[in-house]
Length: 459
Image (spheres, rainbow, N blue to C red):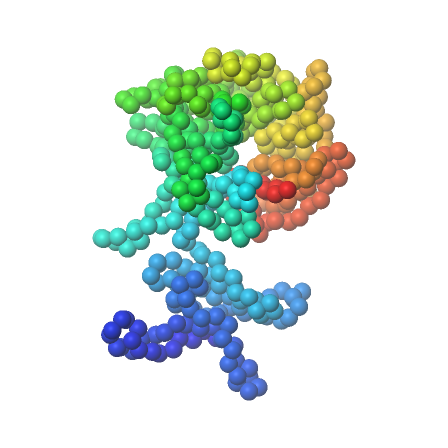
């Protein structure tokens, strides 16, 4: 039952009839006793909208376990959805608009202190009732998530552009310590500029420290992610005719071809130590027509080398793996263009995730629903199937992989029915040594259009 009481003195010193806080209540039909389940507030809504919904699955311990209704925060212009659990007598409220932040995307980075760092497309709104109308601050940026309470403790808008989702690269800071870096993209009338930012992990959570590293005149294609190697930041992108962007001009770019870029993240700002590899693309012989990098390079600690997979050769689906700057010392990295050396070709099980190092092997998911392991210690390199994870006509592994416990890799599968429609999203966990797998349906938690799904392992 959704009720509002009449009251007075609702507007400061003015005495007028008005509505007081709304309530959701239950009435016992035997003696008509009244029990309040929830009262309107700034949290659940100063007004309740429409009628409450009552119901629950037949498997619940009591009938009609859940009471659900909408609330409106009239002073903020936002909406909430409220759920009362009649069994546990608890109330849960979820905001339907970004009072804290909205559209968090991609991978959380565990900071090791009980919090994690993430990227959100919309930060906390400001000036909702600015002069002249309703205003919403839709600035993207970084947020800190408390892993115990699942609440955000800080948000910092990106200084320029939209963070390119969704991972941060970790680099060793000269003199000790580690920093994390991310890329952002700004679309301007005469082109797209990409900027590298350093997130200061030593800054207080209330004011995340973000510093510009350098701006580059090219546009990354899709989710192409940075990776740190020593003090060097590597990332793939669209091939540009020149490297650094100036204040006055953008260089011409070929939007069909790519290149691998590096920047010394601790050089003078903006960094002048910036290089790109020879271009690669569907018609370029540099990498024997291989192109379309799978997110970006990943580091294998056993040989201190970065490896990157591509998923296309000309117009055909074929996986290949390349080593980046193999044998180059830390002092010499990014002093000349990065060099890609082919490690293996002809992979019919085409990689669809970035590599993850597990027990000295590079583990990856595939576009046809398999988990594979690459061993580069052999000559030539070898690949073995760890597990076939397909369910139904077709499945694919998307997003990123996580080693959630020693030797156990978890990720997200997308299942498709015979008509090509999305059927389910499943969380999988695979023991890499045995290939044994467990699954859980997470379709309610992961949307079919999620760009970079995965799980955060907190060990």
